[in-house]
Length: 142
Ligand SMILES: Nc1ncnc2c1ncn2[C@@H]1O[C@H](COP(=O)(O)OP(=O)(O)OP(=O)(O)O)[C@@H](O)[C@H]1O
Ligand SMILES: [Mg+2]
Image (cartoon, rainbow, N blue to C red; front, side):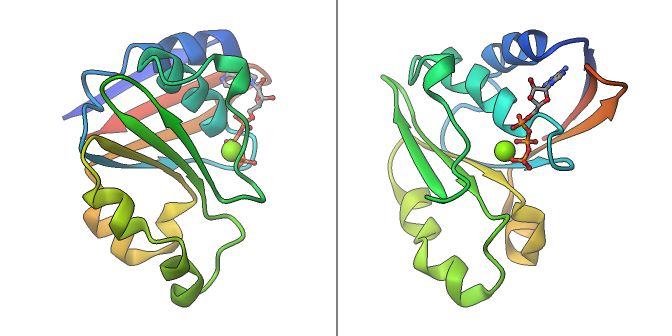
């Protein structure tokens, strides 16, 4: 299934993220694709809020810590940023398989397409593309 929508602001992207709980019901491995600043982390703010796992403003980029966890009543969200992860060995130290095996887990992975294994194993792919300063095209393949 493919869905495409456009948003005109960060707030709209967050609002769209809030509507994705059913589509992203656990267990899921989700790849978030798009250039730097495309809005991947912004979308996660909405997804986490939708799941009741975090307030929008408490969701920040896991740039340095690599993994942020948000626990909701029905799902544990793991927001992962692989931008600085370059080798298979580094990837393994994150223990993504253990996170996936956890009951109720949803992995939301930025820059996961760097690893062919994650491309193969993903359940859902969400791509964001800039359309002017504040516009974004969002495409979901599941
Ligand atoms: N329609 C929009 N949707 C999402 N973000 C938008 C939109 N318009 C403007 N923005 C702005 O674009 C930026 C997106 O940053 P964000 O951190 O979400 O990107 P990212 O894809 O996670 O980048 P990175 O790969 O660096 O982690 C934010 O500053 C946000 O306010
Ligand atoms: Mg990000």
